[in-house]
Image (cartoon, rainbow, N blue to C red; front, side, top):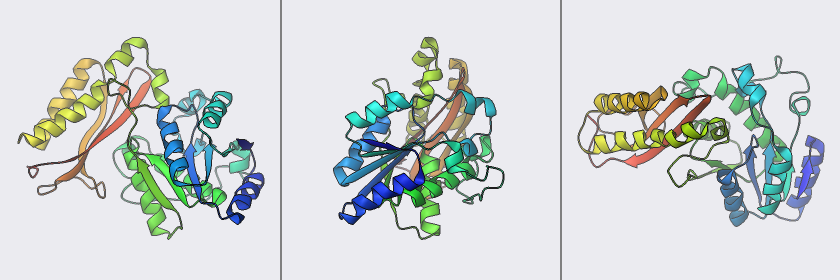
Length: 286
């Protein structure tokens, strides 16, 4: 695997692959890689001829300076994992390479509606940072297909809308959430959990499952969510949000919707965990 740190060197390698008629797959990440990231590489390798991954801790998507500072940087270990997964090229730029004129004067990409509420409500400006850096990476890599995990459901919705609205010539493929044996969604932020918190952490996914089951059983949406919120708070979580949204466009679910996503975020110690459960209800929502 080749590692490049500049846009010029990245483009030279990708253009070389493209002149050979190779299909280019792309997996953007912020590093501190786990099995979920590698599952994206595996999917890209199965469907593409030349796979590029990126590692860049993007300051534009952090609204908390301390969160940005402590986000784990593990480049040597990440390089080894990508090489073992047969990734062809790693793009690992620094902040100056990505934002040569500084962050304050940089053009921002804003995706309306779908970026509002949920994590967008809890982390103001977060999705503007996400859409901006992903737009830059898409233009830099010039891939045919990009791969994202379903755990970050709202992020994927933002990126899909950006691609559609701006007529971008790239396909977006989502890959099911990778989970530990106890159901916890794999995340780079799981490393913030203490052993005691790690034992509790699967409770978020269990709460989402509980909401989905309650809705299937005919319990109203407000009551289903209230019961799950109480359960999480009693376990030691600080619930950020629990909601039921329409899976197709992330609009709030209303009576008659059946294809929904139960989505939530909660704090546990120093970690903010997010998760979701995509489900088709066998009855309409009350």
